[in-house]
Image (tube, rainbow, N blue to C red; front, side, top):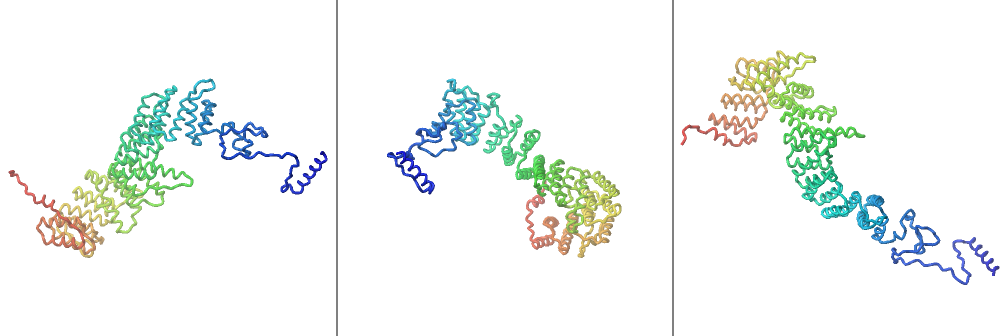
Length: 630
């Protein structure tokens, strides 16, 4: 028998050397080596399985029914029998083995994987279990807040969360601010504004541990703004600032939009002012789009304070963009700056004026000069503020930037009757006192190094004298243009002087030649000198020249002469304005000159000007005033 075993062993060794993969040995023993069959997969995995004796592992990672090892359990400290139980059974078994610190660690792990339902179930099992001393588990307020958060995340209503907060008294736990904030979050999701206000008032009255914090106010204020309850929202926002808490950017943006939509611009300005005084909130800055929106609305409502804050926000954005790498070069729209300059002039706000010009310069980055509208807006603002020195300084910058333009453009840009008229009004604000002061300053500047001489500035003084009915000063200033300053009067100079003569009825006969030059002007002695200057220099009249002559004839109640001037104006290639035709028609009616009236109507039809009716004005003109009462 032993020899047979030796032969069999050698044979099997030889076969393995030939083809170890394709050959299989057949047992020659009287009994067969039986291997166990695999278990049916339908068998529940929760059935406890015996360990594999060959592994000798205490972790039960292998057994005779499941020969495939589970590598995920190699580092587990939980027995395999526990893992293969039902989820609720596993959680219940786990709850018996945890104390407060270990439970907090489990919650921290599960929160990262958002296992909120398991957290809720584990806490409920744990709270009904006993600790290692045989006493009921007692949670702390932080642990209970984790339980509240789990309920919040699985969609528990605010009312149910309030009931859970009430149960904290049974465990001798005092709710803190975080506990109530979780309830406020549920109310925020459900937009329960009334309940949220009551809960916040309760927090204010409860005690030091549950006083509202920045998150509490943020939730309630944001909820009220979103539901268009602006008064209540502003109340709690003010409480937030008084408490020294930080306002979130979301609430601040909602506050801005709500205040602007409701027209509460002064309130918004006061809130921004309070935020600027606090270290926690001075960095608040709405988005670029919202800043432009605030500025636009503030300028429409002439709220200079809010407009200044909006420009300040835009300046912050520009500074941030320049500091980034690569830099983001933001620029404020120049039209917005022109509107800001106009607002500064209307509201007499020098701070807004300086801020507007500074942000414009920073936006342009010295690549080009500001547009003419920006210079005119700055002149208007300085003139409104009564700062004539800075106004004329801006005029000097304006002439330096745009003085070399064509004559047609120059006529529009430097006309004292239109673009520079705010400066004219400022010069004549206090009568001859202001006019003389400005004149002497300009005269002193003409002798400075470098000298400053400006026909446009002197034209403003001439027209200002005409506005104050001071013909002598107007004529003297006109003469000084060529005599004292050594400059050549332009068409605006002659127009301003003609305006002064026509206003004082010094015109005897005014006419214009067809060669587009002023001629046949029969005036007083002073007016004849104006004519000599004009004809000798060959100055061509513009539309304003004709309009002033028409007004002069109307003042003298001579509609025929006014109509003849309009005919010459049309022949010169100009179109009379609607206002001029209406004034002539009104004078024709009052002087019963129906022939001239018909000519005016034909001119209106020719140029497609709708004159309209003057029934209301005629009613006032035809009123018969009498002291005989019925």
